[in-house]
Length: 432
Image (cartoon, rainbow, N blue to C red):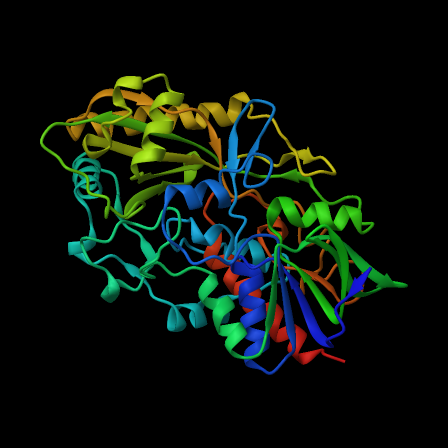
């Protein structure tokens, strides 16, 4: 047994938007922070090969439900934010307020600190522009979406960072990790945390595996931010057996078609614009993909003739709000069924998207297989954590999508960053 002998005030497990935010906020306040990250910290190259390692490794970044819905998560420093589409969606203030959480001030901080704004007109690609014009002509309130992007850094020749952005136009949680390290935090990569260590009802550290060996690290505060799948697995192993039940995973499909006289560039920014049909429980946005992912989706739909038509392909993503349900196994396998109600939402969205695609001139329209995105609700506030995100054990906190108590069908990055800021303030005020 190897013991890290440094004295830490806080251990942060995971470096996605939640963990990275807590680490950064605490480190800036001179709190001694240790970040434990299962994935690597290799420089981002933006290559498909790197993406295969960080999000497409079966059983690690790539998981499947019993119905073969694919669910991907980023196992790397920065977590899934390295691979996300950098879109800042509205925060469910009212829903969180009903559970005793008010993060309006923290959201204001985010907007002051991070580059949150709709894209400049010159950054809106031909696919997004064409779909937006088509949707608006049909009466949809299809509008530009807020993006986490340093737009002054953008150049037309830069490919969008689907597999990580080497040009650093897209904000990701690695940037918060880097700030934390600058202020004295430490990070250990390839560290897979297995369980939390306790003295009575108080968390005092964690046990993790690295390089084939077991290690322990100790601190006065422990924050688990390993994501909607990883966090409940750790908590179960630590004795919180009710973690990992009745969760959401926002199912989605892509609606695709080809058009003539268009050249969708590699720099096309996905989710530039869209519409949220809240009453119908789904949203639609444009969705550009790089060459390899485009080919995979076309092949998955048995549209082999479209595998190499990326530059002529238009795509609308339809993403639904699903119901809570299902369970995770102790090993993190996703056991959840997409039922008729959710499929009907997606079918309704498909019909609307098909109408928009036709108006945009698309031919050979088809839909992809079902996919699942950003699972959450596995360690709900009001159930397994309180309004300060603390578990039944003193000094053990959770900060990631797993604490979201209800499904609301929107990508959660802004919400999770704000929760991280709020949690860091609480920890800073309550350090022994």
